[in-house]
Image 1: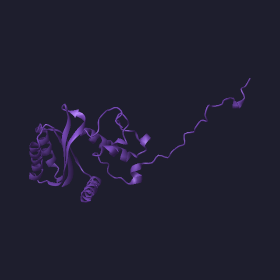
Image 2: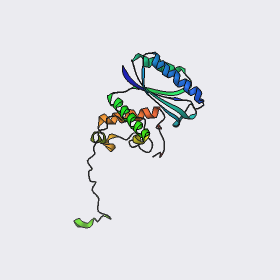
Image 3: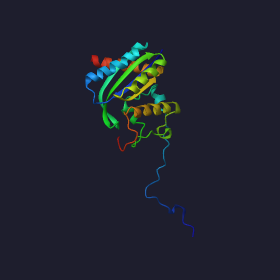
Image 4: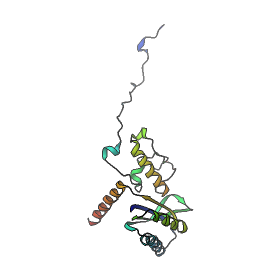
Length: 114
Length: 89
């Protein structure tokens, strides 16, 4: 069970209902195939550094999850099939990345408490 | 007629380049993972055009330079950092 982190950008023309449904779809593919979601983060609408498919903004969504290696193939075919997702990136987190993510999460949690 | 040795006078004294010992800031500060998600930190390793600075200028060791390079390339892929730009600093 390795830990992965995936970020995808959805087209800005989506309403938030469609966006929730899109995120639910990817969350479903992870949990159904035996993955556990560790952490999710919605960065919301952000300006892109360069236009992708003639759009200059996009909804960023980040999911950290633990899964087997073969699940990544399924997840990425889902990304490629869905035309609402204009860009995605998944990578395996090494132990320093996991440690860094934990530290960052505890910091943001602490900041929210203050 | 041989010019006297002290003939050449410079406008201002030639400043000899003091050799600042470069060090790898990651080893010194103990950073182990370079996050591709915060552009502010990565911008320190890019020049004005958005290109990655070479090790001889930043002085980082090869191990961390590779981590910086992969982080920058991931950020570029996700449009967090531009591939090429002008004066974005």
